[in-house]
Length: 268
Image 1 (cartoon, rainbow, N blue to C red):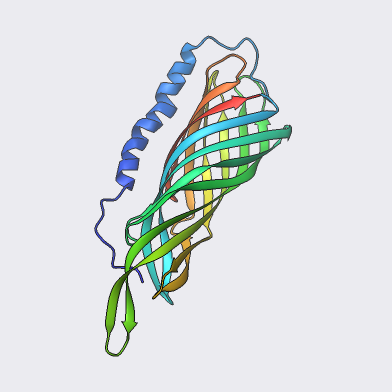
Image 2: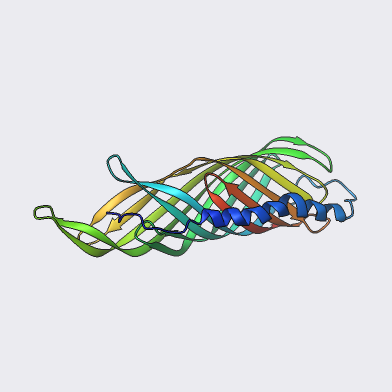
């Protein structure tokens, strides 16, 4: 049984506060920096290498919904910090496949101050280039889909009903394990101006997760779902060498989840 929600300072205002300077970097500082770099002697390469390695850190928060009893839903703000490595390959130009692995934690204060430690996270996905206008200022339309899975565990204090008549309740510690499974589908437009490559698009995300409580007086398996599906994604790649084997990636997502990501991309 979940305790009544406790007051907690929401995280999303802080993320929005940090999104403002982030978007200024993406759409103002980065293009100015790109314009100051001398023009490329040749158009950007369509295929930069056989493999692409992405190293990134991401902070996310989203509202999740749990049905504690028929017709009764309980909401919480799920916060997660993720350190991920992604290895991608492009067997032919329009299609890219990738695997990702790393570590992630999970914090949901409304779920009895749940603190899930860092644990192994893994997933994969694919992207498909639907349209491409060639040239040094090319424009692309890309769709991509991926999945992310991880499991976190904590021991929380909760209240259980020992006896109905007379009504007796007791506070006990139970083991709480959340299996997080997240699916994402995005459609983005990517344009190019010298070393600056911003992108903007829409996303659809889906949670298919479970919350398992186990103890001597309580054992339950609850379904954990998303509160919102639709959102936006905005980001940029900023290249630092003429051969385009190294880039800085900045990305933010809004509405379905609030997230900031910073990463490095390497091509081989």
